[in-house]
Image (cartoon, rainbow, N blue to C red; front, side, top):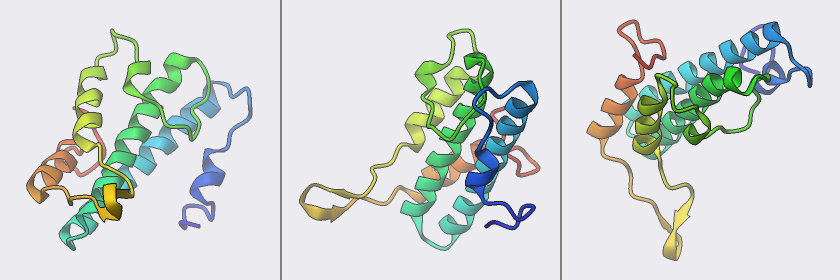
Length: 143
């Protein structure tokens, strides 16, 4: 439970199988709220030196933003599945920006060859990526 009306993230994301425009808008809004929370938490982790976890949350935010943008193009309600920028139509004005964020925020999950930890991202690049995803008011934004 995250305290938002007493519902968990998973509960808020569940929609009817044939979600209409209202449920689609609700899902999109919730995905953007979750992306915003991911970015805020990533900033906290980054400030405390937990760069790997901050990078994972930044990647999660990009994925949620992409899913929110793809939902109307799919003509169906957004769901918790991860969407890829390749699914966006070529004429979508944010496709290039999202693709750049997707590439910049990619991070190796888990352990790498030999059971070693992945390298932590560079703090400057991570901070720049996170800040580029937020507007001056600190809210998630692509502009």
